[in-house]
Length: 309
Image (cartoon, rainbow, N blue to C red; front, side, top):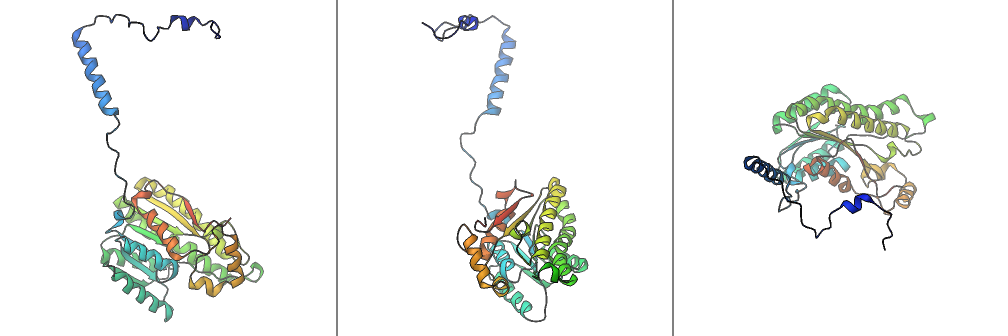
């Protein structure tokens, strides 16, 4: 006995073992045309017998030219090194202070050339649009083009708001935010013309999670996130990906020289992984974003902070 309510449609359904109704006779030419159309449709929609091979993540940047600002030390040096290891020719800037920075830049350039890539290393103040334009032109002339731009140059001058001078505010914002704008503006026309480019901006977890004394730094990095998303929107139609990487506490000389040990201990405790990051942790994400494995990622901000929750 059926437990379903009476359903007139069910009664009209043909049982699966019932013979099919006789096919109506139709003109042979029309029948042939229909069969041909069905075969073509099946061919167009068929699932391929073999799946495409996985993309190699870094090989597709080999031979590209990458520009890295602030590339002589710390995170910038790690980014330049990993891009060179992936086969990129490198142009990097450093801020010439007449001593340590130039020595570090020379050491970095020598290290990169050992990877059999071409290197341009020049002092450049990213706060000055003229300096930026000159460096971009030099990189394109000496290295034969430009494909990847990494805005890494940045400084920090930490002080409580009520003690912060105009110079401390302006120097940080002009370097960290204005500098990135100058570089993007100077390179955008070329990247648009070739219909291909990768731009990665190095921001910070402090853009969204402020720390005491970092008002200028946090504001500059928050602005850089806004610039990243605006550039992604404006350049996307030209096949240019623009993303940001937000490091947490990364073990560099500038960090350990500037940040008290007790604050670093608190940062470790706050990290889900219980450790500080290394510059290479950031660099590996940058290389990924510059590869075609990340071709459908743009306007994103990727944290590299060990779970700074």
